Length: 216
Image (cartoon, rainbow, N blue to C red; front, side):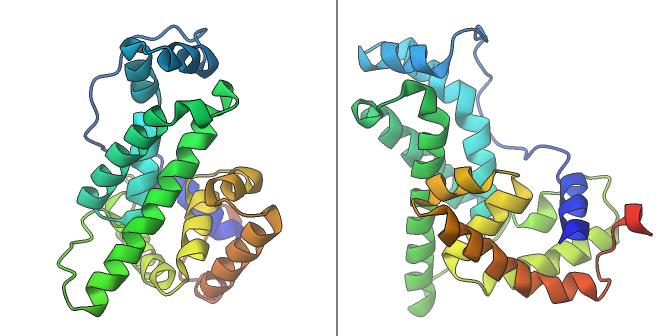
């Protein structure tokens, strides 16, 4: 999967254009642990600071996984509401980022389950207006868009866990341990899920549909 990994890192060089508020000016020395401590005492500024520090990452992950802007916006809102409401459950305030990712992934799972139900009932009217081909670097060539459409189609055939694990690992670049924590399962389980997804994509890549220019 090296060719695909390299191509993805180039394709998504430009951040997702998320509708996020103008960030606060935060002292980089003021870590999440201190902000969480203040937020637990009811400091609204600290809550807002946590939101502004992490909202772009959460929005990007939600868009990458769900491919729908409306669903992603719901997930972002729900994830922060739940995270700030349940701060008392977070033992280590410095782990806020990974904890927030775990909550985000859980909300994504809920969206996928609801989408599956609506699709079964013939009531899914959602539009994939943020699919992977629509999120790439504008400088990417047409062949990249064609390849990403096929990747998107193949990912849609996978179990939800495998799709989420693969996108977090190979599109977002999280380590296996981070992905395992986000998905609330063991490292071995996540590794199997990523391998399962990679096998589905392997034939497409091996047939030279998506070549790594560095290896030509």
